[in-house]
Length: 176
Image 1 (cartoon, one colour):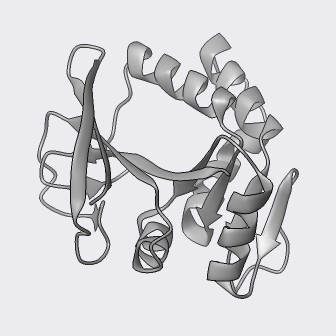
Image 2 (cartoon, rainbow, N blue to C red; image 1 turned 90 degrees about the vertical axis):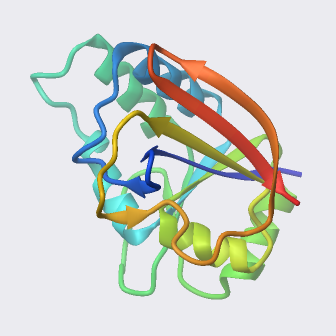
């Protein structure tokens, strides 16, 4: 059975903002390997639309960005949305019964499936379907934005911490 994992970069005060999060070379390498090892990813609409950036090559990309894009394009994606009518390559639209779709996804696959987007993670947390939370803490305070936990914080149990690069700490928790 696959494991649903919600992990994102966040500020010390708990916000996620991809415009403000600057990923250094060590952390970017970590994300390449992370994506490469995934069984797939489940996206909410907004996060999926943000990540579609990686669907097409850009001339200014370096080798690492091309490597990330290749890994991202290869993996299956499931996009949860009531407003989208279609999705891009290697993606499946999930329009109805989120709980049933995610339970079926977990049962049909092995490995890790990333959950991408705080609002989607909230819905899956409310359904008791997130198996692991990974908080990538960056050493700054945003003071605004989208919170990592879009709803009430679930009871969690700490399982690990890792230093990634010089200043990012990954904290790993499971539901208590």
